[in-house]
Amino acid sequence: MTLLFQLTFLIYCFATLTYLLYFYNQKKQMRQLARYVLGAAALSHLVYTVARYFAVGHTPITSNHEAVSFFALSVTLGFLSFRWRYKVKNFGVFVAPIINILMAVAIISSQDVRDLPPALQSLWLPVHASIAVMANAFLALAFSGGVMYLLQEREIKNKRFGLFYSRLPSLEALDSLNQHCLSVGFPLMTLGIITGSVWAKQAWGSYWQWDPKETWSLITWFIYAAILHLRFTAGWRRRRAAIMAIIGFSSALFTLWGVNFLLEGLHSYAG
Image (cartoon, rainbow, N blue to C red; front, side, top):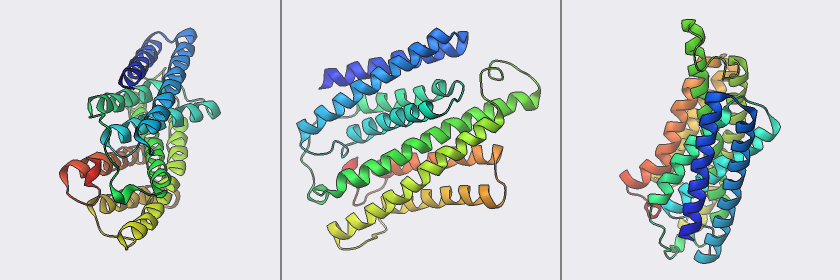
């Protein structure tokens, strides 16, 4: 399995390189090749995930390696499904490096198969964990859109139309991208918290324990709730929405990783 994961990582690297080359030369053949390679990486990643499932005997999402790997796969599938429905120019150029970074983290993490803690031996594991990670995937796409927006806005504001201006979508398109990703990611995050609470009641006898992971999940939820509230009631769009999408995703990443390594709690097994 290790060789399969390493091969998948190399395919992702090639996809990222191809996207970057396309960003430079803007040749349609290069763009098409990048999509095919990313699709091949996703397929290889799916095969690895299924193989890992049979090897460990449960949903492979409990260790740091498995969680980050599934995160990378979710971002890939989220991007491909989004790209199938909408056309956002050079979106893959900004998403592919994020996937590559996640894969790099996963590949240096321990891939040892460990026994599943009693609290995780539940049918809620694949439900809660997969929903939570898919939510983070769409928030990662919103983050990418926010970065693209700020780069495009900077060139327009400075009236220096350089590398990004002709290669990035309009500010209106990027703002719509941000809204779409949040409109998918936030409900998934909400559902993830709800399923996690039900699972906590089953495992520990209480819906909410104020565990660090739970607390930071709630903090992140409030950040995104505020983003959507201000977007639709106070007109917080464009630049403000892009900045908040970046801040929100930083909080989501801390919830996913930082809590596991820096704060002791009921979820410390994930570290």
